[in-house]
Length: 403
Image 1: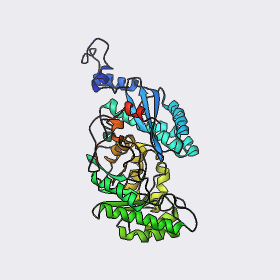
Image 2: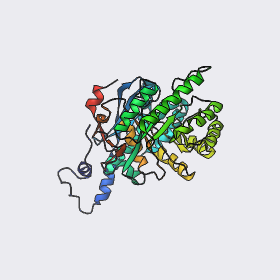
Image 3: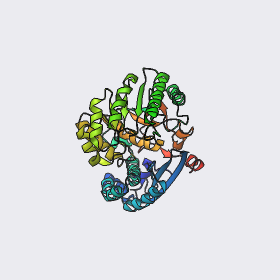
Image 4: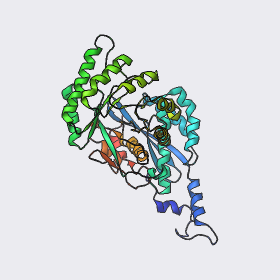
């Protein structure tokens, strides 16, 4: 469905046939417009599964309204798309027939289900929440970053996560993809070279190979670009401490998710011992989940994911907690352009923003999924002043690559 123009929105408050500037004598035009905004209600829900690769598809959401406006959100990588779609249907009933500004009401009503269903429900809630912010920005005629305190930066630095696009999981394979990202202008690259690590005696061999992959990428991108390593919680405390020591020669920008989030004491110990910054938090939901993590000093850099943490407002709240603790925020999110735009609008408003994640190299048509296309220049996403998230879904591309 087409987006509503600002002129069309203003015309909602004008009696038919009177023209856009004709109001009844004694009426208050601003009040009429406020009434028109309040009358816009949520009416429909669409979901789009887009095929990407064996590591997961993209699941996109579009809310429809009585005014013809539509809002976008992303619910990808919840772990079970079919269940997430069912939960989206349940959560949609919480907003059907209601206004565009009831974000906190949706959050409160959906949280019990998130507590029971975990990430599958978290991505559903987060996606609908993103849609509401997109709609709010459109109906008010402002970009989403204006709704979160105003823009502190006009472009958002992204790092290229090459992990989901590398099929040749060897030092040469990782190095080749990293070289591509560097040629495309990215000055920071991340990989997760320990994925698939077995248990038992083969762990050391696998660890050694992972370090060799990281070293190959460092050589490929040079010393002036930043190198980020994600361990995906494959290590226990003892091996994690050893990994941090062995990674020191690579001059890492950060070492991410060395051990599982619980017990939190393991991450605290690794963070205290590590010479490089540590980062984590992608799987944590909500401010309540992040508070003990931040208070304990589990990592140096927090990584809420706009899809997993509860949405754009929750991301802003988590960033505020981190700011109070003197910690930078680097949102996780190797998914589609929709989630990247949602996170970027919040990042533009954050005093403690560091860098944003970008899923690099998965599909050649990635940028075309939105209209206008997603555009990064030297790894920087330029935010426009178009209302809402500033993009619509390219339905032709979504249908062409439907899962």
